[in-house]
Image 1 (cartoon, rainbow over the protein chains, first blue to last red):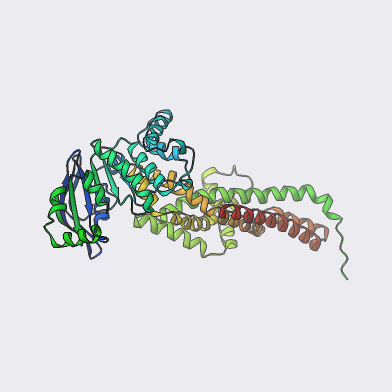
Image 2: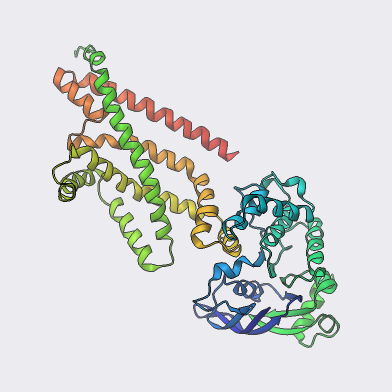
Length: 242
Length: 224
């Protein structure tokens, strides 16, 4: 589904990504973790072309992201993305947030878009908030709406960029529950997150990054059992034992 | 001691009202065209295309660096030539047309700076979110960024409109009978220039001050 092949990226002369290669198969859940500044958010943003990269290739469902001839808008319309800071549109109601891209990008009718949006809102347990505005919702609720907004586009895969990092601790689980459910339904997911509980529960593979490089790319059990690299061991001991 | 004599004002009211309409016409046209053209300039200036952004920046810097009076005169001298070459001699009074164009183009430069700041006040993540949903850059601007930008900058746009309303009096240099021009002509005709200009000043003050108060009220409501 997603193939990342020897991707490198520079900001000027500063290299932020170095020769990264990994793949995410259809139906697979891959968790990307690593210390802050390790390039994991940058890498996931390269997958749908929000960040440009200078070397290597990324293909999503066979379409090359870095190819100038690729219609990026079309590609993104079926690659869902959830952001750290939710990024709901504050000037639109929750329903409008869920329908705007369906009507303007996919060309669905207003009725179809609303019924789809409300069904998804129901699914994330927020049907009652349909007429409110994002500012009236808690962070956890906003993030669930953001997930519903991405799902409304019938994505072939989902990208999560630290979806719980901006949340108060008591709201993290409500978001993770939605993500777990999604994973169990077989959605292809690439998740940048520090939630190792989530990784243990649903991930198939864990990718560990440091200094812009993929240091470890292993099946979940292997990663948590015996991480091969010293840096991954250090990282795990830091975030698991406190 | 100077004896005030206000008697020439009542009879001149219809004429003054007509002048006020011209003032409003210039003001409103410049606001509408200025905001539309200013928005395009602002978006162009923020474009990643260097040529487009340079062209927009040059336009804005040019208009912001020359006095408005000169721009008005300039267009009065140039626009008729241009229009005549297109429409022949079928044109009527060229003064209003050239004033409308001059003000619109001039104000667009100022509006574009306000709008540019407004666009930049919208979080960058909003653009990413729009793009990630498959919207084009233009759709993201139109549906996501600009509505938020305009909400943030409404008070500034209105303040600029009040300044513009006052600046329209500069059209006297091309002899256009706006409110100020009419008041001046009536005063000159009746030998009552002081009274007429005091009266005109009072009207400008009342309208501008009322509008500013309205902006203040809007501002405090948005701040809440």
